[in-house]
Image (tube, rainbow, N blue to C red; front, side, top):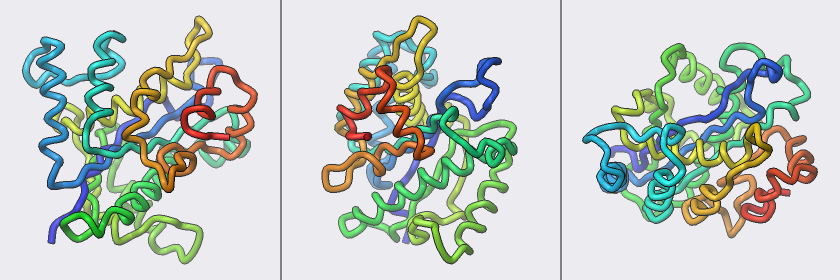
Length: 261
């Protein structure tokens, strides 16, 4: 039997800690999960939005390059589609053990672990109602400088650990981890919109504002478990980031919209 799900993953922000030289305060990693049987139909919404915006055929919709008025139809289409989205929000200034994450890709790998834990939970919950073997095909937006075999090796090592790993390995299979340019897989453009939408919601502009309208619109497709979003469809890292959310007026929407406390 083939896989039951297709998972598209993209990020926004960077992993650096040199904030005085422009490193972003937040690193955001998002996934969208689609039943494989519905994959083609769901990702076709990119074509529909592209036509609405009068863009050229096959022109990628990069969220950060779109005007605000053009982002809204894309977000609205995603919010009405048959998918679920999961996002990891990393507030880097709240990380106390920075030395553990300064090695290249270390933060990216760890955020991916947190993300795929939650992807596997959602897929496991849905499995009785979905065709296939319960596994997921994982599609990353290709980072030209990254060796994806190293990412597969990282997850193989996690699988060998006897404790503290909450990934359901019946869902996440390292052999099914792949990477493609975003223009080659339309689902990656949807994941980009989710990640960028959340990034705009937490990233304070030089004028002192955040824009959380996108993530407010996206709420219908954010994964929740028994009505709870925090820790499922929206996960903060590290734990200290919760204290930052309580104190910062710029990200108070996380409490109101998604119950982050």
